[in-house]
Each structure stands twice: as structure tokens, then as C-alpha cells.
Length: 255
Ligand code: PGA
Image: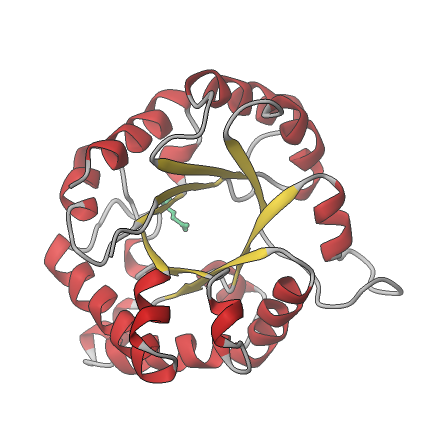
């Protein structure tokens, strides 16, 4: 089964709207038309609109870093799915480990967001992954299972088609430490096995499972060569045109 590679940049709390515009325009100059690799950039909320304008007419797509699972109303500081769609966002990162850790987001809250995003025509990028402590205690697969099934509770087989999973070992995020390709592949294959059990083989084969955690041009090729790694969710290396575009190139050349 061939899945289309996806390279997504998670800009986190970086780039002002004008800096974001410049970065996105630079990426847009390289990613002019649809090719074998799908490319997404996820700026901060305040930069979404400018970035959306910068990528208009290119094949770069827009994603957000979060949403609040209510249509509108008295939720100070939050952003709705409708607002994201109004600036032409297609994807939304949900359940990132930084949100789990610093904002105490639980699997059930993340699940609400995943379902809300799907109902509102946004494609969630659901992030899951173990901490160093959990890996050392041999709990990696248990943690991944709880977060995956918890995040996807109540999501139908048809809707699963619009979900992307990102496996991000927390100990590899922003640390320069990467999971070896074999370590990552083991977890990615496990995720696909869980999806097969929860849905079925054909639904599971269609889901893209990205790797995230210090992915950079120097290690991307061997990660992307793994059978169940279908792209990357990139933090640090997504903040410059050259490194991000090198990752897109690596995905184009992946087997
Ligand atoms: P990193 O971040 O590439 O800087 O490790 C990845 C992520 O947190 O999505």
C-alpha cells in the first residue's frame, strides 16, 4: 500500500506574522505544485492569516497547532474550528506532548478535540509518544496504545481516513536525540497493528503515521525509508526554508 508522504512543520511558539510570511513564502517558492509529498506548515494562531496568504497558489497547506472543541462562545483565549477554516487551515495538530505536559491535556480532552476537528472538516494530526522515564520502565507500547486508542475513541472507520498520527517520543523532541530507525519502526508498526485491530487492515493501511523528534536532513532518509514511517512532524528544522525543504526532498527520494 503506498501512502503519500507528509512533511509537516510545527513552528510552535516561533515566528511573528511577518517572519512567518517570509518563511512560508520561501517554502512556497520551492513547493509550487502538488507533487508526491504533501507539505504542511503550522504557524501560531496569530500568523495563520498571513501565512495563508503567503502560500496561496502554491501546494503548501496550512495547519494550526490546536483548537478548542466548541463552536463559539465564552472561552477566553481559545480558537474555534470555524476560525481555522476561515483562514483555510486544513490540518490541526492535537495532543502534542507539550500540550499534554504544560497544559495538562488528557486523552479524553484530546479525544473531544479530535472528534470536533473531524466533524468540522479539519484533519487532526494526533500526537502520541512516551517520555524517557516511560521508555526506561518498558512502558512505551502501553503508553502509545493508551494515547492512540484514547485519542481515537468514537472515531469511525470513514473518519479515520482523515486522521494523521504522529509518533513523537518525548525524549527526542527538541533534544537532538532521535529514535533509531529501528526503534521508530517498531512503534510505527505497533501503531498500525493497533489500528488494524480497532478498525481493519485496509483502514489501517491508509493512515499516515509520521515520526517526530529531532528529525533533520541528516537523519531523515533512514527514518523515512522505514516501512511504516510516512513522513515527519518537524519542529526545529522547520524554521528555516533550507532545512525544511531538504526534508521535503528526502521524502521525495524515500523508497
Ligand atoms: P523537534 O520537534 O523536531 O524540534 O524535535 C518536533 C515536534 O515537537 O513536533
